[in-house]
Length: 213
Length: 314
Image (cartoon, rainbow over all chains, first blue to last red; front, side):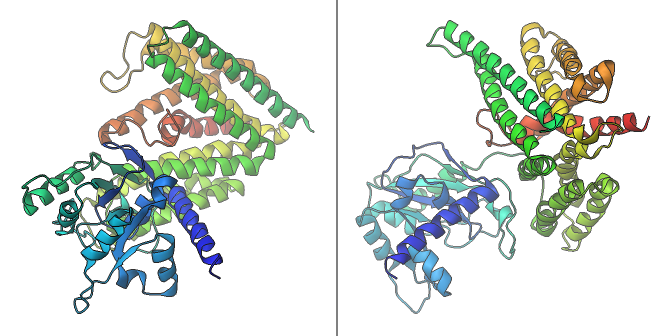
């Protein structure tokens, strides 16, 4: 059983990657950085539950091995299947969002960074259901950048997923998805939290592909 | 092996010979230029030749497996093309179900009808049934914002990438007296004259092109198009032995298909310009997307299909 679970996790991971490629032809566009193994926090816009698997799928294998998505425990522990996929396939850092539990999410995130892992985070906190490009960022990204200044914070724009798999729909539409990685940002000396978060959000929304409609 | 299979093998070998020639020609030009510079025209030509290799191998294999192979190949091409098209169109969440129906019901059914040879049904399924059904499904979700644009663009995508493309395998259903199973060779004829015409139009256009057809939109010139269409007619004449049309008929059909295809390419360029994109997608390396590769065949296919059908009746 203990030997089979990692194998099953690999098979499920590859299947998710192939499914993402077959349906959305998902592709990485490395605009500001190269796909090299450096410790990074990929921070991304969040419109769909498919965002994280898309980013995970386009990372080259060497980078994918070291990346851990930061995700909500209530979602990923809801049933047995999710409890397998979230922690074992994606190797998620699970955060308990319930207010009565003081989970100290930043401690878990910093512990994962100190292990050498890269992270995928969604600094908006929730899925964006509005017409705006991004919701205001939570403080987490700033705190990470302040606590671990050597880690690259990489803006990562996932295009089209809000139409491919919007909240409340069951069937994913096979439209083309592009994941764009931009140049990394760091918290500068003396930069205030609000200034940094505004700059990081602009670096992210600047990556949105221009398609007239 | 029957004569049709032998002809398919000969055609594949002929196509390989042309590609070997084109690859050799490009490599010689490449070797003769300064190794530190890159000639973008030559590089574009070479990537075109490369994706041509892929197309010839795929179509050749599909033809050898027969009708089902060709139908499945074009169904996959349709799927990829529809995905590229609908990625760029206007849509809202209210259209989610109708778009899912387009991908997972309308598109497969159209190819199923083609495979079943129900010619009356596949000729009207998308222009009538999908045309009326999908707007109903979208309207039921109660969002009127840009409704006409949304449903019109979805229908355009289906017509171009499913209805038109499905007329390539539908050529195999045309029963022309005395031809037996040779209708499958019409697929090769259409694809070869249109694509070779495009290739030569590109080549001659760069050399002798002066007068732009649609200035500010497409680099195509009247001189290039004229040379391309004449080349397509000559190729059609050379290939007349695989068609029921005879020498002059094959040349005329090749010329019409090639000309329609070239104007189809200009229409596809206009849509891309409108949406501010250079290519439909990234799926064919160095080439853009499936619609970039297929645009001329897409426009030529239904015209060629119906003209062939009239020829069979006449």
